[in-house]
Length: 422
Image (cartoon, rainbow, N blue to C red; front, top):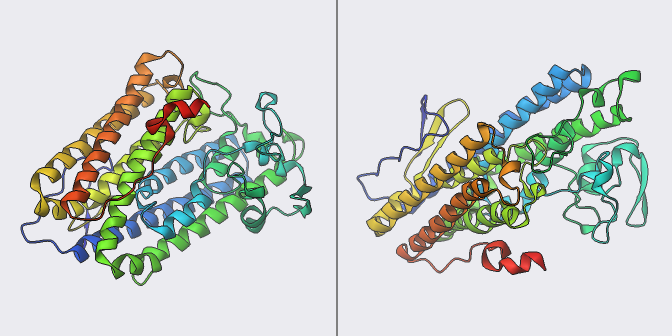
């Protein structure tokens, strides 16, 4: 069974979990994996509730301090959530749900006011500047919508991915991020969004109009995030559907673990979230583009992959959830494959930590993406290359475990870069 320990170990610690002396059963490895999911989604829920309280305070008593507190709570909430992304791709219940909470990129003009440089409606998205906050009624797909009350139901059922356009992101972390920070208009210069706290002020102190509706939207989006995370945390609890599905077929469960690791490592993170931005030199391709928190999102995505392979997760309160691991299982099949993959994963974390440290020292991810910035490109591409290398190691682990070949998510930015510019 998985052990729950208290420790002062930081979430950035990279010490390998010790190998077990006894033979490891697949069911034990899956149990660890499910317990880590339960712990990480539980932490995602608890930090989202802290964010919810900060948002309620901002709306009730708007001030510069209240806005900064809500921003800080959002940043803290990202730490455990990003570590859950290794559970995507291999687990259908997570992949089908994920778009509600972490969809990106988004056409933020759907939600609120945007700078004139943003442009208007496009052939791809006629609702790119719908601005729901400014419009209590509007026409969507030929139907008149009553948005006098901005509710979680309106966001989830009517607005999110409206007209089947993925960029119409109305819910989740990034909608909340935009409402807290506003647009980042600094391009590839240092600086995040600069939304004034008075966008939530009452009466004559209100800036950019519709402050009451802006508060309604922020509250609805935050309340919906909490309820969505409550649902997912329950799926990984004892008796939850995600856990039961995982444990029903041990080989399929191990495949799910490896699929999540490889697809996040390769197509999603190395490709869509990192190399694509380098190819386009576009800060709009940042994952957390409004807050300039992308360096942390990349780091904790990488750490989530590591958690799965090493069978260990450190929670926000220092609690360690660990047990028999995928690494242990691979080591029994081929010790060399396991040793190489562990080294590859640790190298990836070193490269992501180097990028993270540079951003925290003032060399922001925006700046790294500037065309001709060789230092920035090297920092990002070193991490991309390490992610690609570790994906090859994951493929070797699949072979060592004598599993059917797994198809990982790809990305044109890695597999066919010329297509990015077509």
